[in-house]
Length: 492
Image (cartoon, rainbow, N blue to C red):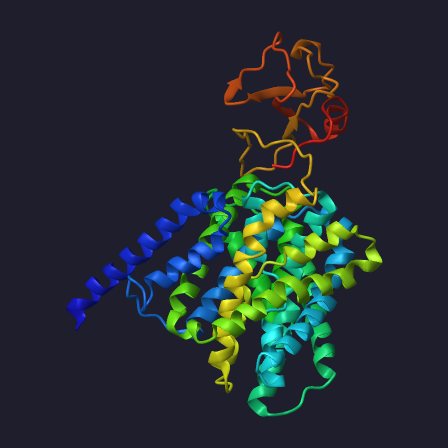
């Protein structure tokens, strides 16, 4: 028995390696054909599963729930690190309404629709709660990985909503599952519990965020590679501690990361790169695992109800609820329509659907299979049309294109200076000027020019041209004067 274990482990690792490699290699091609990356990962997982070509046997719902939760923590932490506080102040009110009332409204509409498709009321509203929130992994990967530059207000609202709305869906799912198992009716206490959990999560998340900022600014570690270890520890702590106190760990980890990402900390640029890679690894692993968990033969049995509910979610429930929630904030009709359309679902509903299975709730497997089908439909219909809809509704931002090469400073010390990127458009005050003629303040200096696919060495006689990406090194007190010359700095 023992002699076969190394071979079985080697086979499993080989199969997983092949699946993850194929996912990475074909992700770009999938994007060109409008296929969401998340859907590609899930399909490859299904092909590698028991009923696919790989034959990997996997049906551990408890392990799926635990590993999926870890993956979501890592994805939310990375999303928070990359969320500017200025964006939060601009979009927090509509995003907060969508993350609370929007989730409740979507759950209600989907519950009524599920009852129409044959579910009794308790199972119907449980299904509605499970698919009620957008998925941070899906939204972040589409908006940041597709090269789309949305108009600021719309993009900020979508990202904040996806990072904030998981707590309400989790609370609703747990409460409805417990009611289904116990047979007790639901009461208004569920809303009070939801508010209490979100309040505890927000308070502890902000507190842990400020504590993490202080720690990362003042602690000195012997190697740069230890800083990501410390931030991973902070991510898990910011999720686990509020959860132990009956708070929302998902909300806490997102707020904690947001505060950390908007502070000058040691090894900052290195941490952002590492967490971006970890988030992608978590996303790939999570969707592959969920694909392995699905059985195509079981999905065939719920084809019509899954397809019908997926279409209701995409064309009715989400757009209707979003339009009502955004009315007080005076969004233009096409902006509300877009936010309603790009309400992508991903791994979160599937992970939530494992909770009733683990609780051994009656009819839990039927709910799980329908939820899985809804996620696939949602990935295909809104997910595959995001680029086309963005351009059709005129919501593409006029933000400058990213440089073909990026320059950054990575240091375990807090440096009194920063490297700031600028893009020169034809109307820029310094376009056409030579570097020697620039009235740069103090110690500010042009460090590098990226011109197309070329790196241009900055010299006194070098002329700055429209379309150049220019990197300026300056001290914090000089940045405002540099911005007067070059305009607003780029967000890399």
